[in-house]
Image (cartoon, rainbow, N blue to C red; front, side, top):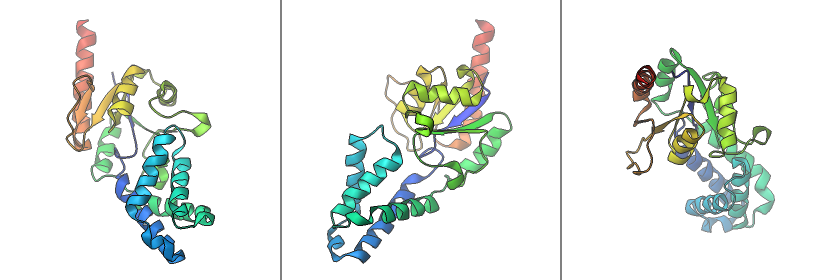
Length: 235
C-alpha cells in the first residue's frame, strides 16, 4: 500500500533551465556594464565554468558549486572582487524566474486527495522560493544538517524518516534514473521515472512506473498500488 509520494525538484517539478539561463544572462549583462573586458565572455563560457566545477565537486552543496563557477567566470574579465555581489544577484534572479511546470499544480492537487506529499532534493530550490510554498507535508534538502546528496543511502533514509512511513509505502518521483529510480529502489522505496523528453530506457533499469507527464501520475500510482495489493493477496 502506498501512503506517500515524494518528489525531486529540479527538472521534475521545476523548469529550472530557463531560470538558470536567465540568471546567467543577467550576470553577464552586469559584467559587461562593469568592464569592457567582459565583452569577450559569453554565456557558453559561464555554462562551461559550471560544468567544470560541478564535475570536480559533484558532492558539494549547489550554492558552493555555483559560487565557484561564477568565480571562474568573473576571473575571465578581472572581476574577482565582485563575486559576492554578483552571486547574490544571480541567485535572486534565478529564484525570481523559477516556476513549476504547468502540469505540476493540478497533479499535486489530485495526488493530495489520496497520498501524503513530500519534497526532497539535492539542490537549493527551496519550495517556498519556487512557487511551491505549503504544497508538501515535509521537505528534505541535501546538506541540511550534513545530509549527503542522492544517491547516498542516507538521503533516502532521511526521506523515510521525514515521511514517517515504511520505505515500501513511499514512491519517489523524479527525472533521474540514478537518483530517483535506482537510488530509491535500493533503499526499499518505489522509484517512478518522470521521462518528460521521451528518452530511451536502459535495459538494466526497471522503474516501478514511468510517466511522461505528471498528469498521468495519479493513474500510474493507482495501478502500482493495485499491483502491490494483488501480489500481497496472492502471495
